[in-house]
Length: 288
Image 1 (spheres, rainbow, N blue to C red):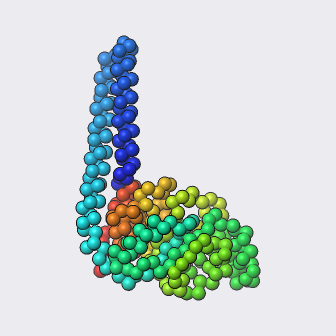
Image 2 (spheres, rainbow, N blue to C red; image 1 turned 60 degrees about the vertical axis):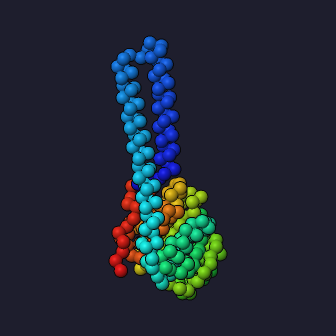
Image 3 (cartoon, one colour; image 1 turned 135 degrees about the vertical axis):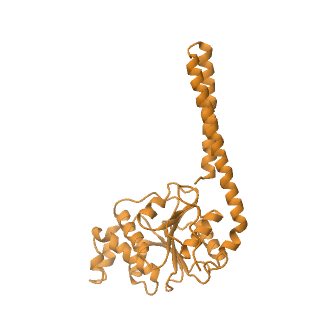
């Protein structure tokens, strides 16, 4: 689909290029350099550029109308969709208050309580410090020690985050991994929302391996897991979420994005949804 701001910029670029082309063509024509055939080609290219710009503008208008029309249906679509569901939020990097507000609005609009807990991960990780903290526990976590075991470590932490309860591994590694946390760590989550902080660059090396295990562990959880971002996030985390088996919503700042998140948390068909890529805007409405 289409990002409105992107297409406004695209339209502007098209018209700037068109004006430059016309000016250059006129200049060459005046100098006697351009032949009649060249002028005919230039006019054809100009007409094609105008048609392309008009088509893009029409697409922008249609999307805006879709958003406006959906806003009217939004309350009925969302009513009690997530009644009684307990949703946890996991941030990769610092917590973004605006995204938390958008998630909580989704939950509130869908009849759920506000998030039961939110936790942010400090990245990049320090693998050696994690090993030291695990070594200090004796042989209990020996199976998770070493850079080659970072995927398994991430997966084990993902399982604890979903299940709640005592979360012993999070307690052992909290001083190394946790930036911020709040809420009830003991309750099991009925759904998890994952956010990569918009200012965060894609991670490499040890951190990438750790996050691979974390995402894979979340994807294997019994609860629905959805990665979200706003329609302005660059670079997008959607390809990473998709590769790791997570559903995603790329426009949590829009009514359609909040509805897509609610549908997915309620059990709709997993996948990638939103308005800024080639994916569908909304998943099918879940039954029941």
